[in-house]
Image (cartoon, rainbow, N blue to C red; front, side, top):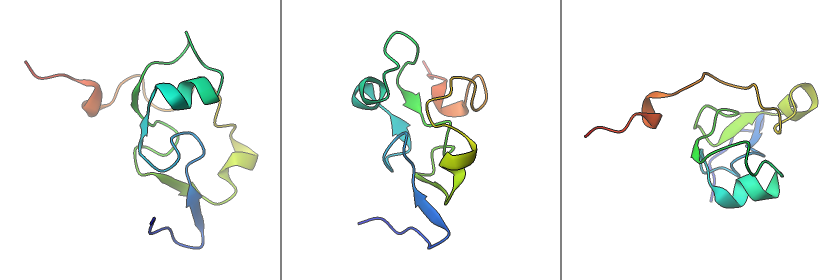
Length: 75
């Protein structure tokens, strides 16, 4: 299913999708704090370095850049 190396693990924030959706937001109890968008915990890769969750809580609000090029909508 996922092609993850042994030194990596599936992102606990987006569950490997690279995108945080409403289900993820609800599961992480971040309703009214987060919006849907690319996953800033794994930088939209779907996986993170094994052990990252011990260093950086995936529920933190201050991770990643303020915006990502995928957040920009072309009109």
